[in-house]
Image 1 (cartoon, helix red, strand yellow):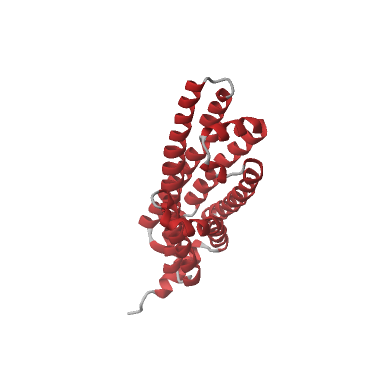
Image 2 (cartoon, helix red, strand yellow):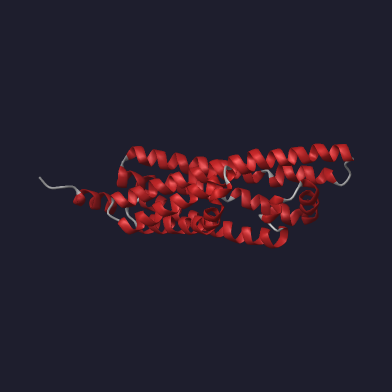
Length: 240
Protein backbone atom coordinates (compact mmCIF):
# COMPACT_ATOMS: atom_id res chain seq x y z
CA UNK A 1 0.00 0.00 0.00
CA UNK A 2 2.84 2.40 0.85
CA UNK A 3 4.47 1.77 -2.53
CA UNK A 4 1.18 2.35 -4.32
CA UNK A 5 0.53 5.60 -2.46
CA UNK A 6 4.08 6.81 -3.05
CA UNK A 7 3.68 6.21 -6.78
CA UNK A 8 0.40 8.14 -6.82
CA UNK A 9 1.87 11.06 -4.89
CA UNK A 10 4.75 11.08 -7.36
CA UNK A 11 2.26 11.19 -10.22
CA UNK A 12 0.46 14.15 -8.64
CA UNK A 13 3.80 15.93 -8.15
CA UNK A 14 4.61 15.33 -11.80
CA UNK A 15 1.28 16.80 -12.92
CA UNK A 16 1.77 19.85 -10.73
CA UNK A 17 5.31 20.30 -12.00
CA UNK A 18 4.35 19.93 -15.66
CA UNK A 19 1.41 22.33 -15.26
CA UNK A 20 3.66 24.76 -13.40
CA UNK A 21 6.25 24.66 -16.18
CA UNK A 22 3.61 25.50 -18.76
CA UNK A 23 2.00 28.31 -16.73
CA UNK A 24 5.25 29.98 -15.67
CA UNK A 25 6.67 29.60 -19.18
CA UNK A 26 3.70 31.49 -20.62
CA UNK A 27 4.09 34.18 -17.96
CA UNK A 28 7.79 34.60 -18.77
CA UNK A 29 6.95 34.67 -22.46
CA UNK A 30 4.43 37.47 -21.94
CA UNK A 31 6.40 39.48 -19.38
CA UNK A 32 9.96 38.88 -20.54
CA UNK A 33 9.73 37.63 -24.14
CA UNK A 34 11.27 34.33 -23.05
CA UNK A 35 12.80 32.33 -24.71
CA UNK A 36 13.23 34.64 -27.73
CA UNK A 37 15.10 37.12 -25.55
CA UNK A 38 17.92 34.57 -25.17
CA UNK A 39 19.09 35.53 -28.65
CA UNK A 40 19.90 39.07 -27.43
CA UNK A 41 22.95 40.27 -25.57
CA UNK A 42 23.44 41.42 -22.00
CA UNK A 43 22.84 45.05 -22.97
CA UNK A 44 19.19 44.29 -23.72
CA UNK A 45 18.45 41.37 -21.41
CA UNK A 46 19.88 42.64 -18.12
CA UNK A 47 18.05 46.01 -18.10
CA UNK A 48 14.76 44.21 -18.82
CA UNK A 49 15.47 41.73 -16.05
CA UNK A 50 16.14 44.57 -13.59
CA UNK A 51 12.96 46.35 -14.71
CA UNK A 52 10.92 43.24 -13.92
CA UNK A 53 11.65 43.70 -10.24
CA UNK A 54 10.59 41.30 -7.50
CA UNK A 55 7.73 39.81 -9.51
CA UNK A 56 9.94 38.62 -12.33
CA UNK A 57 12.54 37.39 -9.84
CA UNK A 58 9.87 35.38 -8.02
CA UNK A 59 8.73 33.85 -11.32
CA UNK A 60 12.28 32.72 -12.06
CA UNK A 61 12.64 31.28 -8.56
CA UNK A 62 9.43 29.31 -8.99
CA UNK A 63 10.52 28.14 -12.45
CA UNK A 64 13.85 27.02 -10.98
CA UNK A 65 12.16 25.07 -8.17
CA UNK A 66 9.75 23.14 -10.40
CA UNK A 67 12.33 20.48 -11.41
CA UNK A 68 12.19 19.27 -7.80
CA UNK A 69 8.82 17.72 -8.66
CA UNK A 70 10.62 15.68 -11.33
CA UNK A 71 13.17 14.52 -8.76
CA UNK A 72 10.41 13.23 -6.46
CA UNK A 73 8.45 11.69 -9.33
CA UNK A 74 11.56 9.93 -10.63
CA UNK A 75 12.17 8.26 -7.29
CA UNK A 76 8.48 7.43 -6.93
CA UNK A 77 8.51 5.75 -10.35
CA UNK A 78 10.98 3.09 -9.19
CA UNK A 79 8.31 0.47 -8.28
CA UNK A 80 6.75 0.77 -11.74
CA UNK A 81 10.19 0.50 -13.37
CA UNK A 82 11.29 -2.40 -11.20
CA UNK A 83 8.12 -4.43 -11.70
CA UNK A 84 8.23 -3.75 -15.43
CA UNK A 85 11.90 -4.42 -16.14
CA UNK A 86 13.82 -5.19 -12.96
CA UNK A 87 15.84 -3.42 -10.30
CA UNK A 88 18.64 -2.36 -12.65
CA UNK A 89 16.33 -0.34 -14.89
CA UNK A 90 14.59 1.12 -11.83
CA UNK A 91 17.88 2.46 -10.52
CA UNK A 92 18.91 3.73 -13.94
CA UNK A 93 15.58 5.48 -14.47
CA UNK A 94 15.57 7.09 -11.03
CA UNK A 95 19.17 8.24 -11.50
CA UNK A 96 18.29 9.77 -14.88
CA UNK A 97 15.32 11.62 -13.38
CA UNK A 98 17.38 12.93 -10.45
CA UNK A 99 20.18 14.08 -12.79
CA UNK A 100 17.63 15.79 -15.04
CA UNK A 101 16.05 17.58 -12.08
CA UNK A 102 19.36 18.77 -10.62
CA UNK A 103 20.85 19.96 -13.91
CA UNK A 104 17.67 21.71 -15.03
CA UNK A 105 17.34 23.41 -11.65
CA UNK A 106 20.95 24.60 -11.69
CA UNK A 107 20.55 25.88 -15.24
CA UNK A 108 17.44 27.89 -14.39
CA UNK A 109 18.78 29.20 -11.08
CA UNK A 110 21.24 31.39 -12.97
CA UNK A 111 18.36 33.80 -13.63
CA UNK A 112 17.35 34.72 -10.05
CA UNK A 113 20.97 34.52 -8.83
CA UNK A 114 23.83 35.29 -11.25
CA UNK A 115 21.82 37.19 -13.85
CA UNK A 116 19.90 39.10 -11.19
CA UNK A 117 23.17 40.24 -9.62
CA UNK A 118 24.54 41.24 -13.03
CA UNK A 119 21.33 43.15 -13.79
CA UNK A 120 21.61 45.08 -10.50
CA UNK A 121 25.10 46.24 -11.43
CA UNK A 122 24.44 47.02 -15.08
CA UNK A 123 22.85 50.49 -14.82
CA UNK A 124 25.67 52.06 -12.83
CA UNK A 125 28.53 50.15 -14.49
CA UNK A 126 31.17 51.79 -16.65
CA UNK A 127 31.74 50.70 -20.24
CA UNK A 128 34.65 48.45 -19.23
CA UNK A 129 32.68 47.00 -16.35
CA UNK A 130 29.72 46.31 -18.65
CA UNK A 131 32.01 44.40 -20.98
CA UNK A 132 32.97 42.16 -18.03
CA UNK A 133 29.33 41.78 -17.00
CA UNK A 134 28.44 40.80 -20.55
CA UNK A 135 31.18 38.16 -20.60
CA UNK A 136 29.90 36.68 -17.34
CA UNK A 137 26.34 36.75 -18.69
CA UNK A 138 27.33 34.91 -21.87
CA UNK A 139 29.36 32.32 -19.95
CA UNK A 140 26.50 31.58 -17.54
CA UNK A 141 24.10 31.14 -20.44
CA UNK A 142 26.49 28.90 -22.33
CA UNK A 143 27.64 26.59 -19.56
CA UNK A 144 24.83 26.65 -16.98
CA UNK A 145 21.97 27.20 -19.41
CA UNK A 146 22.75 25.61 -22.76
CA UNK A 147 25.12 22.79 -21.84
CA UNK A 148 24.11 21.86 -18.28
CA UNK A 149 20.43 22.72 -18.01
CA UNK A 150 19.27 22.12 -21.57
CA UNK A 151 21.64 19.60 -23.17
CA UNK A 152 22.47 17.36 -20.20
CA UNK A 153 19.16 18.02 -18.45
CA UNK A 154 16.99 17.16 -21.43
CA UNK A 155 19.08 14.14 -22.40
CA UNK A 156 18.74 12.84 -18.84
CA UNK A 157 15.01 13.47 -18.93
CA UNK A 158 14.79 11.59 -22.23
CA UNK A 159 16.65 8.74 -20.54
CA UNK A 160 14.01 8.57 -17.81
CA UNK A 161 11.28 8.67 -20.45
CA UNK A 162 12.97 5.77 -22.25
CA UNK A 163 13.18 3.70 -19.06
CA UNK A 164 9.48 4.30 -18.34
CA UNK A 165 8.55 3.48 -21.93
CA UNK A 166 10.56 0.27 -21.90
CA UNK A 167 9.01 -0.80 -18.58
CA UNK A 168 5.51 -0.18 -19.92
CA UNK A 169 6.31 -2.14 -23.07
CA UNK A 170 7.65 -5.05 -21.04
CA UNK A 171 4.53 -5.03 -18.86
CA UNK A 172 2.31 -5.51 -21.94
CA UNK A 173 1.20 -1.86 -22.08
CA UNK A 174 2.51 -1.65 -25.62
CA UNK A 175 0.66 1.48 -26.78
CA UNK A 176 1.67 3.50 -23.75
CA UNK A 177 5.21 2.22 -23.98
CA UNK A 178 5.47 3.18 -27.63
CA UNK A 179 4.13 6.68 -26.95
CA UNK A 180 6.57 7.32 -24.10
CA UNK A 181 9.49 5.90 -26.09
CA UNK A 182 8.57 8.17 -29.02
CA UNK A 183 8.50 11.16 -26.67
CA UNK A 184 11.91 10.12 -25.33
CA UNK A 185 13.36 10.08 -28.86
CA UNK A 186 11.92 13.51 -29.72
CA UNK A 187 13.17 15.10 -26.47
CA UNK A 188 16.64 13.55 -26.93
CA UNK A 189 16.96 14.73 -30.52
CA UNK A 190 15.65 18.18 -29.59
CA UNK A 191 18.30 18.50 -26.87
CA UNK A 192 20.96 18.24 -29.57
CA UNK A 193 19.99 21.71 -30.81
CA UNK A 194 22.82 22.91 -28.58
CA UNK A 195 25.25 21.11 -30.88
CA UNK A 196 23.67 21.53 -34.32
CA UNK A 197 20.92 23.64 -35.86
CA UNK A 198 19.84 20.72 -38.07
CA UNK A 199 17.50 19.45 -35.35
CA UNK A 200 15.84 22.85 -34.77
CA UNK A 201 12.46 21.78 -36.25
CA UNK A 202 12.38 18.70 -34.01
CA UNK A 203 13.32 20.88 -31.04
CA UNK A 204 10.22 22.99 -31.67
CA UNK A 205 8.10 19.84 -31.58
CA UNK A 206 9.92 18.78 -28.43
CA UNK A 207 8.75 21.91 -26.61
CA UNK A 208 5.21 20.55 -26.92
CA UNK A 209 6.02 16.86 -26.52
CA UNK A 210 7.99 17.31 -23.28
CA UNK A 211 5.11 18.50 -21.04
CA UNK A 212 2.72 16.10 -22.77
CA UNK A 213 5.14 13.28 -22.01
CA UNK A 214 5.21 14.30 -18.34
CA UNK A 215 1.41 14.26 -18.17
CA UNK A 216 1.33 10.88 -19.92
CA UNK A 217 3.83 9.32 -17.53
CA UNK A 218 1.94 10.78 -14.58
CA UNK A 219 -1.22 9.08 -15.84
CA UNK A 220 0.48 5.69 -16.03
CA UNK A 221 2.05 6.14 -12.61
CA UNK A 222 -1.28 7.07 -11.05
CA UNK A 223 -3.37 4.24 -12.48
CA UNK A 224 -0.85 1.41 -12.81
CA UNK A 225 -0.48 -0.83 -9.78
CA UNK A 226 3.02 -2.30 -9.37
CA UNK A 227 1.44 -5.64 -8.43
CA UNK A 228 -0.65 -5.57 -11.62
CA UNK A 229 2.47 -4.90 -13.67
CA UNK A 230 4.20 -7.86 -12.07
CA UNK A 231 1.22 -10.13 -12.80
CA UNK A 232 1.05 -8.97 -16.43
CA UNK A 233 4.75 -9.62 -16.84
CA UNK A 234 4.39 -13.10 -15.30
CA UNK A 235 1.43 -13.92 -17.52
CA UNK A 236 3.47 -12.92 -20.56
CA UNK A 237 6.18 -15.48 -19.77
CA UNK A 238 6.07 -18.64 -21.90
CA UNK A 239 4.65 -21.71 -20.18
CA UNK A 240 6.65 -24.90 -20.06
